[in-house]
Length: 113
Length: 112
Image 1 (cartoon, one colour):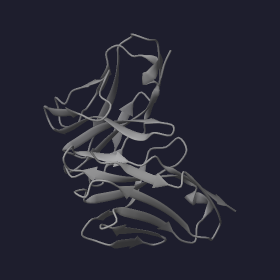
Image 2: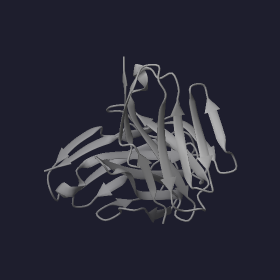
Image 3: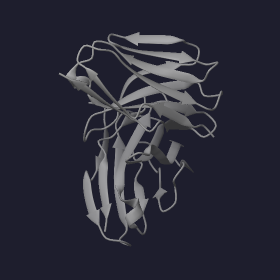
């Protein structure tokens, strides 16, 4: 079954404690991206990756890091989480780099206390 | 960069009626416009998309229209059903930055 798998689904942490949200896709997709969703603001892109070892900033990259060492994995790293990073996070992937048929993971609800 | 505005923010219709959600975009270079449906607690799911070389696309009860000159596109849902209740997002693909720019969403409620 084609899927984008995110872990964990829910995470409660405290300010400053480093965390990683994993994302893995099994569709051999070139393009992967992270979005955060906040009420009234829709979905905003954090980082994206066109291919292995190729990543770039989206609209709201501050406080986040990513890596793309393998084609299937695209983890999101919060080195020192703060309360304003409390949000619902989605990883997404697509076959090509033209944005078509972007497929989303199930989401990670993060709360930073 | 691209900016996408979506209206209305909430929409309530009677079962069987039609629903229309409208979006405008700012970058005339945008050429791909998907619509996503997000049910409560679930991931956004692609329901229909359109490229700028096409004016209209239909898939059963769902249709999307695109007016490139006016830079707006719309989602039309006919014969609405309670299971159509969800938040709908429009989006535009920005080639220059390799990202989808999303509208702020429309919460559709279909009353039985």
